[in-house]
Every structure is written in structure tokens, then in C-alpha cells.
Length: 292
Image (spheres, rainbow, N blue to C red):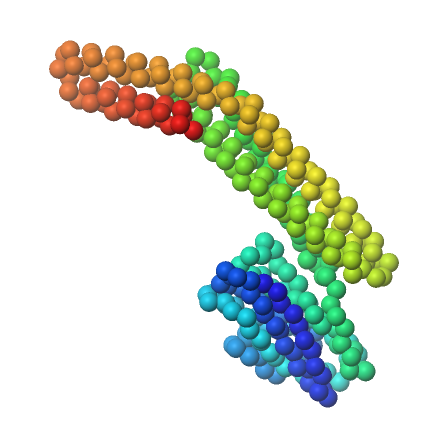
């Protein structure tokens, strides 16, 4: 999805159009246009909401999204020289909020408009998201390693001990895999947003800020790659704990077979059924492990 802003000025009224271009397969999106402070909304097309959240105009499409042009009108105050727009949008294919591009600054005195720069806020959010995702992934990796060591450290374990401990370790592993998948994506998004901010920076402050963002984004992207590599190593390292569960499952089958025979010998139907059910459950789990 791409969203561009076009501004026209007619005396003390600003006419704004937001041109939405949908990517194939996208069905929904949200637009949150932020208008210059103190400017009054005169009208907004297509049910744009501007009374609930002063200073914002919002459109929400939840299905059947298509290319469209939204429009609204603002009354320009008499005592201002400049108005800046800071709208955001998020489409179905977006991981983070995106800045509305196009014209974003009105110089009221001479009636001119300026093309927007990539918003520092977007770069800040993207880089911070990369940082937070890294923290979550490292925590998930640590949890997987800790729980895998617990399984590995069991002394003469019973089937039940291994089953529950292995379940915790498997869940932690799956969570870590998902977390590492996202940190790589967020690392890329952070780098792209930081580079965008750098590409349009003009003042010393903007350049300094963007330089810092690029450095942080690079660091987090490198950390995300390292964390993903460490996870792959740890998964390979602890593959042998499956052997512990296989061994205990085989022992469990033997134990339940013996209980089944003993129950049959004394005609204890209820105990025999329980032993058979436990044996079948252990056998099914053992087959599942060998098929993974």
C-alpha cells in the first residue's frame, strides 16, 4: 500500500487529497491523518472521523480495500505562517506504521507547499521495535536452553517427568524460533527506516539524529542475526534430549505391558484397560518422535 498527500490552497482554505494505492491481495487499512495544530476541519469525505480525536482525521477500511482518493478541507488560521502534516497509515502488508508521503508543509505566506521527509518518528519506532524484538528473542533463547538442560539433567527419569519437561522445552524452542524469525524482519525494517531518515536529513540536528539511528539499527540487525544463529546451534546441540524421551517411552511401554499381563492373569479388567491405554499413548508418542 502507498499513500500520498496532495495540497492545494484557495485563500484561507486548504484542500487536501490522500491518494491510496492498494497492493494486490490487501483488503484492509487504517489512515490517521494529523493536521496542523489549531487548524479547523471544515469537511472530510467518506466518513472521515475528526470530532472524536481533535487534530486527527481517521479512515478505517476493514474489507474490500481498493484504490481510492480521500479529501478534506481545513480552515487556515490568520495568524500562522506555516502548517505541518504528520499523518500515518498501516495497510494489511505493513509491519509498522508508515508515514503519509507527498506534500506535508504549507508555507501560508507565499502559498507554497513542500514535499515531506521520512519522519524521524517512524525511524525511531522501527529501530526501537527491532531492539525490543531482540530482547524478547534472547529471553526466549535463554528459556529454551534452560529447560533443555533440565531435561538433560534428569537422573533416572520416569516417563511422566520427561514428558512434562520435554513439553516445556519444546514450547520454549518453538517460541524462540518464532521470535528469531521476527527479529530478522524487524532488523531489516529498522535499517531501511533509519536509512530513509538519513537520506532526507538536511539540518545538523537531523543528520546527527539519523546517524545515531543508523548505528543503532545496524547494531540491532547484527544482534538479531547472531541470536538466530545461536538458536540454530542450540537446537542442534539439544537434539539428543529426544533420545532421553524415546528411551523412557520404550521403558514405559514395557512397564505397561507387564501391568497388562498381570491384570489379565487375575482378571482385573479395569486395571488391564488402564495399562493398555497408557501403553498405546506411550507408543503413539514414540512413533510421533521417530516421524519428526
